[in-house]
Image (cartoon, rainbow, N blue to C red; front, side, top):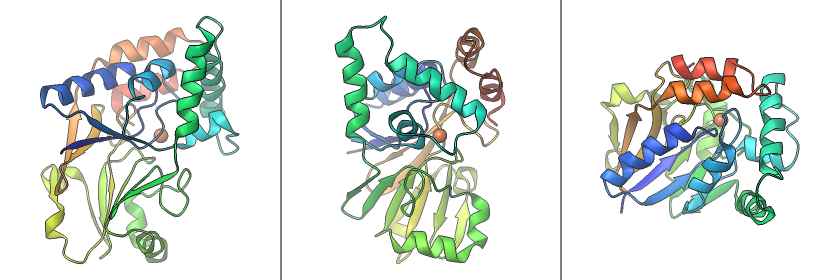
Length: 252
Ligand SMILES: [Fe+2]
């Protein structure tokens, strides 16, 4: 059965709503969430609630930071982190509803393996922290260390750049793959697949990015959403830096 693999939602309710509509139209109900549901965006409570039913919920660095301490957060990320934390503890809501949000965060795991498929946020080496970006393909030691920990397939997020990396040190953007890759053609090679960011893409395309996977074929998708509403919500919230709104318009 096909699963939708969603990463880096970043409290973007409008993008998540549109992606859910896309999935409903195709009768895809199984959701795997690769972390960073919250942070940066204006609707952390709503985004968490919309993903309560995820089959797998991976902890991103933003969930880790809200539960523990985000020592490596820059000032803009920290401002949104503190605001997010206050939202999740807001006395405007029933206490039990706040508990539900925190309990969900508490269930999140850093790495989940299902047969030879692995799910994590950043990389299998440092699950919530390590970035894998296209330039890393020249860093053989790093990539070999990562592939050593993968049985066959690993889905990640974190960099907000949809991309694939294979253990023969090749890599490709979704466009070069015409939007899909058939894993049966990998042979002995292993593969690392970044689903891109649903709620804050940084590859120059502002549409929501995610993948679907039917057990053989991974498809990359982009879905348009109403950016302006999300942007206006961020502008209206004094404690979230405007920069985090502006970047949604350009996907950077
Ligand atoms: Fe993220």
